[in-house]
Image (tube, rainbow, N blue to C red; front, side, top):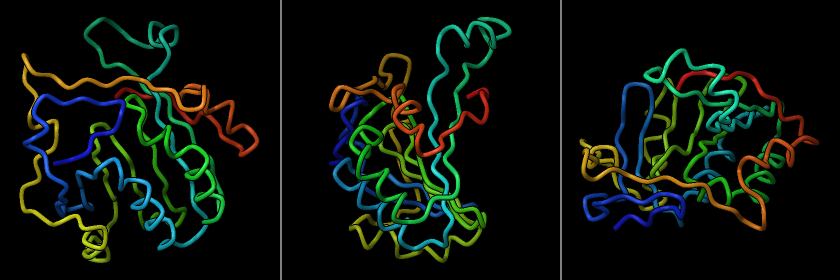
Length: 198
């Protein structure tokens, strides 16, 4: 059974398995909470520098009221970046803030590469995506973490319905939450790149 992150709950956990599927533009996987950090660390060490860090947060309420055209329009998210990292620095961010980033149910985060070769993201409900134009390059990547391949991945999103939705919540680790990270990472050069519809 898939070990869920602390900030997400799903109604039918028994329907989810730790597996991955190859897609046209990369790979998508259900990754147990206990393996997400090691998957990210492995991915970072495979890549060419420089590396960028990406953090996506739901837009705060005041900005959301200003940005939304009406009650039916999409909510927005704030996209933050840190550019020009080397692998050691990327791994340090993961070591310092990984527990919060991994277990928070509201944020999404990842690392990409300035040569546009690949990007990894942790999304909601334990979904990890790898974007790459050469998915064959990663054909054994998830297997090395005992995550098996499937032709039809069932994610948490496939199990939700009106009566049985998923739940995501913000968490705190060592007294900070993900909305504190832009301040925490100021010395790393984090910047708000855009606010865009989800």
